[in-house]
Image 1 (spheres, helix red, strand yellow):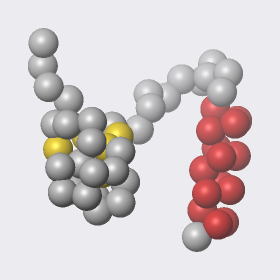
Image 2 (cartoon, rainbow, N blue to C red):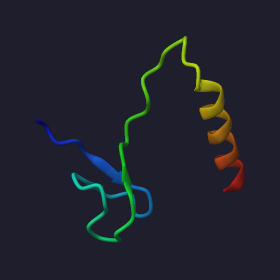
Image 3 (cartoon, helix red, strand yellow):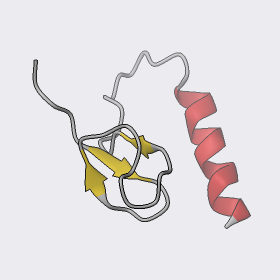
Image 4 (cartoon, rainbow, N blue to C red):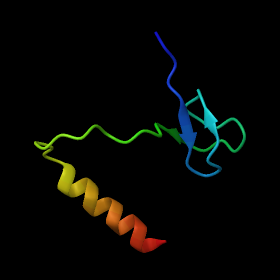
Length: 56
């Protein structure tokens, strides 16, 4: 079983852990989801991303 790299949301450091060892926040998969033209949730994902960018 291979290890997957994660990226911390707060400090942007890369780690193999699910929690960042330096700040303790959640680390997520840095790669984007695979593209599919039949993606049933693509509309909602784009909408959520747009709202997140507007809050910043």
